[in-house]
Amino acid sequence: MYPHTFILLGASGDLAKKKIYPTIWYLYRDNLLPRTTKFVGYARTKQTLAEVREKCKKYMKVRPGEGNKFEQFWAANEYLSGSYDKRVDYEMLNQLISKFEKGPTANRIFYLAVPPSVFEDVTVNIKNACISIKGFTRVIIEKPFGRDDVSSDKLSNHLTGLFKEEQIYRIDHYLGKEMVQNLMTIRFANQIFNPAWNRENIASVLISFKEPFGTEGRGGYFDDFGIIRDVMQNHLLQILSLVAMEKPVTLNPNDIRDEKVKVLRHIQPIELKDILVGQYIGNPEGQGDEKLSYLDDPTVPKGSVTPTYALVALWINNARWQGVPFILRCGKALNERKAEVRVQYKDVPGDIFNGHAKRNELVIRVQPGEALYLKMMSKSPGMKFDLVETELDLTYSTRYREADVPDAYERLILDVFTGTQMHFVRNDELKEAWRIFTPVLNQLESDSIQPVPYVYGSRGPLEADKKLQDYDFKYSGIFNCVISRLH
Ligand code: BG6
Picture 1: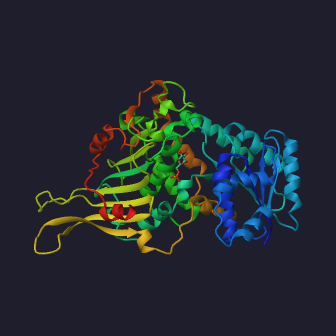
Picture 2: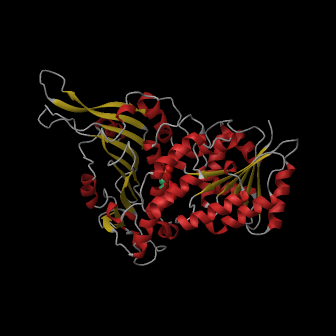
Picture 3: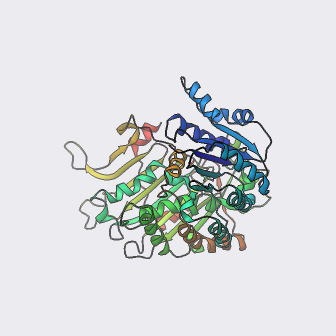
């Protein structure tokens, strides 16, 4: 096996300690990486590897019996401090990496966990001083990929000048989630869904993301972006493209991404009439942080109108979807943590049940607790001839008790080692995403549109329910068995 080096730039930052170090440890622990992989952390902070280890400690789970392996993992690690903008420091980095690259072939993966302000310097210096000369070089990058179409294009052009598209892995960690990956299988490996997956049968599609906490000191970053850029323009739009795209020619990553881009191209830029924005206010009866408004966060500028909640309807003008609202909804400081897709079918035509039949709904729950269930009507068991709403239920925790669903980051980082770009965002997808969102984002800012207040811990602005009705999404009942199992 050829040597691989995983270089983590920004190794002293939050993302590195909370997410990336734990992820590479789990991959190492489970013997999923090439045995000869070396890990090199690089950041401005002058510190020893022991200090890096100490900072990551509380985020890395080490189970009984894994102590030796954990020592081996750290023994395979190096740390080097250096600037982000001086070539000479990257030459030192290159020397350090080269030390472990004995033999004719050696591959390098760079993970950029660095702030956007140094992104250009870092990539130029990698290109100038750290490219592998006897194997592949891949770079993993994280959002923000700009904050509108212009800045994103600038960044893309910069990257295109340095690396080929096959070398660039743009992470959208939602593409690493089990149920998001399952969307293609559900749609294209089952004959029952596909014939009805269209405007003749589906009334609306709701894709939602809810989080029960606010910005928690991250307000400085968040305020410049807002929930639409933070979650909707990337995570939710990616889910939408997988729900709405046509069947790809093959499972080849570029065939899949071709279809994702195609469906995005059918979407018109969002209009102001199709958007509702909200911002959370404190709940005087709540506990701790719940008492605090978004504007109470000391890192948030006074009077900010940045949305922490948004509901948007997108329209796909193609033969399959014309007239079907795709509703994207996301918010922080809400009543629960949940991400799911609800495909709501139309009312049954020619009703013979006096209006008692409720709509079918296919629900794909991304988190928490992966599940797929189909809400349907059935005769109530027994003498009566009444209707009851019930579910065909595939809840993972009961159906796949032994299954070990990996974390999104683990899956995606492993994909980079194996060179699979299926679950990464291609340049043209990103461009389409910004085309759809930029005009309305500009308008929200230029007109200083006031977000509707909603209380921390609530379901969001009350106006959202009315909007859902307008977009032909009918809310009816709850999924009892899953809910009760979760509690
Ligand atoms: C990130 C956003 O991309 O996704 C965060 O920047 C958000 O604001 C997070 O909290 C949610 O990810 P997950 O995997 O916890 O649903």
